[in-house]
Amino acid sequence: MRRIVGALAAFAVGLVMIAGAAQAASKYAALVIDADTDTVLFSRNGDARRHPASLTKIMTLYMLFEALESGHIKPGQHLTVSKRAAGQPPSKLGLKRGQTIKVEDAIRALVTKSANDVATAISEALGGTEYRFALKMTDKARALGMRKTTFRNASGLHHRRQVTTARDMATLAIAIQRDFPQYYHYFSTRSFTWKGRTYTNHNKLLGRYRGTDGIKTGYIRASGFNLVASVERNGHRLIGVVFGGKKGVTRDRQMRNILDRGFKQVAEIRVASATPPLPVPRPQDQDTATDKPAALLVATAVAHVLPAPPLPTPAPEMEAGSRDGGDDDWGVQVGAYSTEVRAQRAIAVARGQVTGLLNSADAKVETLNRRDGPIFRARLVGLMETEARAACLALKRRHLPCVPVPAKAMLDASSTAEPAG
Image 1 (cartoon, rainbow, N blue to C red):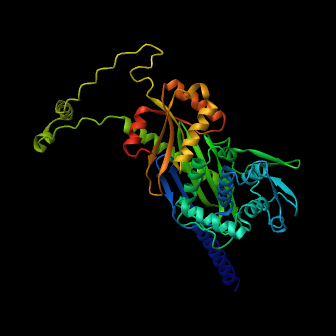
Image 2 (cartoon, rainbow, N blue to C red):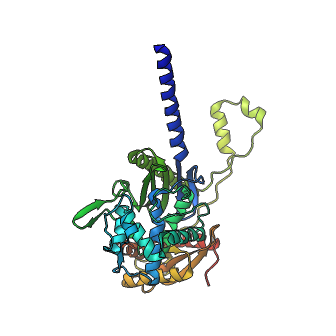
Image 3 (cartoon, rainbow, N blue to C red):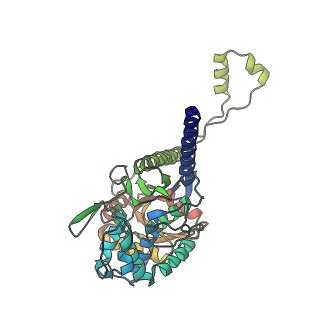
């Protein structure tokens, strides 16, 4: 009898373990996308619906940034906390009904503490009620190309119909950088102090994984540990998304692994595109080839290789400092935006921040047509390489986006894009 009871107990434990493993697998999804080309470099369940948890707050912040840009809300404005906002469950700042919080502090509270009471206060300020705000969030998601995302609240607290996908979250991460470069730097905030208490950012990749500059973590029991990360190296940006981690540590490890793989792919693509094709050997007669000694086979193969084309004659060297003949075939890209107006505004902002280096540059907006709608690249061209790199260094110190772009890259892009009028 004891043996039977023991066997049944072991069987029950096994079923629980299997069910737990299956549940964990059903939460998992991951994706890495090249933010510049929209190329998916890695995907596991990338289009499967998952619960976003506090990744929802990325859209809440997108809506807030939009209100700031339009002037509907001011950075120094205070938001009033309602009874409903104060009653939100943790994670929270512990705001009381009637208390106020400045908009800029609210942004930092969402990025670092992931405060649910603050998210609700924002939603009520912008939408009247959190329900109406969630409807607007969903409408915005559709406008951005997030076809499988539905929002039901501003915080990410569990709602069975609040769902998204790894691909949709990558789309949102790209959009918030593209549309609001002046505010994106908030996502790199390491810590935030409120009423004498300091809260650290839950995104542990910041400062620990080279090139990470945002964006957001999330967790509820129904989702597991989620993370959207943005990493830029050598002027190349990848967006990584992980859903359903068992722990924060394993989620972060998985993110590093898939981003490592993504950057390796990018490097291989660059090498492949920069390497000229090898000459093709002429076909040999199969019968005679197989009868020859190995050394003779090698010699024959080399002899039958088509001659490589002659190397191009090098261009004459130019005197240092000269801007004639191609030295000014560089530019800078200061973001890519959903409208031409935003692209023009980004150009104006960049010029205003780095007056000495960009005054003589020509403004250029290029349209790139993508499946989720056109984007408009904001560029300043006609610079020397040293000027382009110096300008980007200065702009990044001011938390503004900038990538030095050589002429060849600009020509390649314009060949696939219609120029903006």
